[in-house]
Amino acid sequence: MQAAPVVQGLFEGQGDATRLLASRCRGCGSVYFPRSLSCRHPRCTDKAPQDILLGPHGTVYSFTVQAYRPPPLFVMDDWAPYALGLIELPEGLRVMAMLTGRAPQDWRIGEPVTLTTGVLFRDAEGREVLTFQFRPLAISTATAAEGALA
Image (cartoon, rainbow, N blue to C red; front, side, top):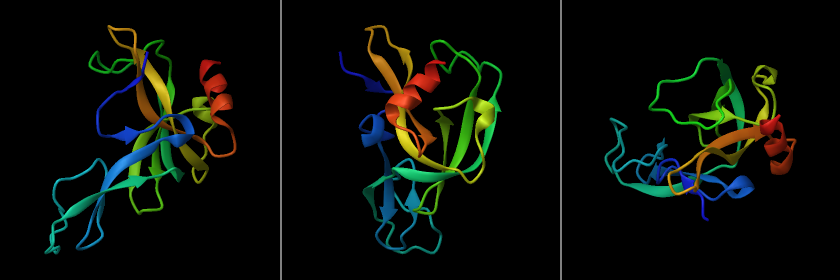
């Protein structure tokens, strides 16, 4: 059975092949994630974004540990505290994502990371519902999955 993204249009691929779906304005070069239908830069006269892929690498700009269960709108099988990071990407923007591959408190600001996916929950049909995450650059996807299960 095929996995499904938590929200269509945020990312494509799985594991090490994951890329974020974004937009770059042809006029001024502003980058938007998630994708944008129009450039929001006030001085831009073109306002014509084109789709681009972001990733896979970034740097932990900041992080926190999500230590309480979010409201019921957020669905996650086997909930446990997790690290939530603000990741600085080479394209000049920062994105928030779950961090995986080590204990939540063991992350460090400035650490290099790479994009991957992780299972949030199984839907009513039994399909895995995936979200994008970042893991330490120095470990493989298989090692990250093992660390997430620990």
